[in-house]
Image (cartoon, rainbow, N blue to C red; front, side, top):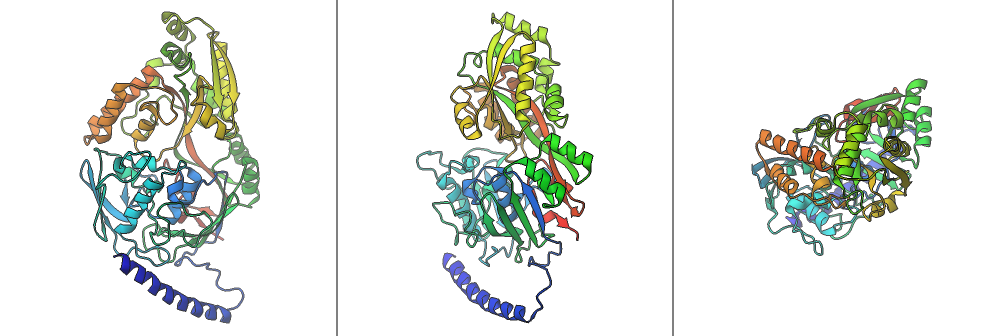
Length: 544
């Protein structure tokens, strides 16, 4: 197969060269105006500009685990499966996949798939894409999501023996190392983007600006990229899937701060602003009417994590008393202009098995109840606490939330709270080292399943390494991830939320919407705003 692919690539290269000569000759006979199409397989919409403050870690799927990078990847690569806008269940993208049993998934690739350079997309490319992601194991990457097919060797990471079988060019069989009902959702994530094995290196990331080799089979082609400044996308003329581009060209302009992004969308320098304007900015835009604020369903989660290595953090009564005192509605009103929704569970509303366990256990904020918890445990008051937050990473309102929570705790007379901050790069290290008793973090889902708000948080300290561990929690996590009965799994997920409310390794704060700002010429923006936070360029069109 490999020789056939190489032969075809060379043959297509000769044909493409001939076609280019013909095209250039034809262009020489055209007027200077041309037809303004800009390519794109018939995409008729005018080019448009997206402005964002999201940074890009890596365009290569093997080197990123962030929205800025993933949203490039979703638009230039295909995944085996996909989640439709505002849907929840995976449907075919490059392939149709199904469970044969709880540990086996078989995927059949669609007929006639090609990359944007003309190379055939086969099962060999799929195997290559998964294998290189796991083996590169980039510290900024998301290969951790592929644990069900990994060998678990941190020093020499790779696929588990026999994890992926490719019996023919159109069939991929995944043999999971444990029953995993989330793996079908993982097949929709940018982590599993399919790259061309003829243009990507097997053992290293491709340079971001090497757009000639950044080859995918998705709706768009990345034609230009300059880090921190701009990315240019052209509609993929060879794309034949369901995600047909509505516009021939899309520009993404990167901003370092929300203030110039707000100015740009109000003045028409960008057509859409998405991630991230502050609630104050959004309210201002709505009031002046210079652009439309469009709100969609979201799954953003903000929460406070206890560090169990500190004296306060290891004390369950202290953790519970803070959970008893926190006034989430006041945080929403005073820190976010009422634009976020109080969260009473580690799992956001809308996911199977979700329940408001913190509300059931603690009810409304109650100073007397919090005092009783501390007195019963013999804790002397006021309890000294140090809260931590990163001032720039989650936007300008984070400091307001930190101060609001500190004020709530101090005004109870039960706590003596100080607030400190650190830039995100340092913050990620020092919160694990015990710099704070309680620190704030945010989360967006990797895939739409309740487990994605559970396993990364409460299994043996979670990704934030806070020192929490509960054997019953680990057992329930193992059970729910492999449970095929929906009702039984929902019950297990409910039990996990109740344990979290009892043990309080973290305190849910709020859930947020998916919000964009757009000018009146833009269509389709509302349709792509959903809990996946995939900004689907192919759905959006600019009139005029």
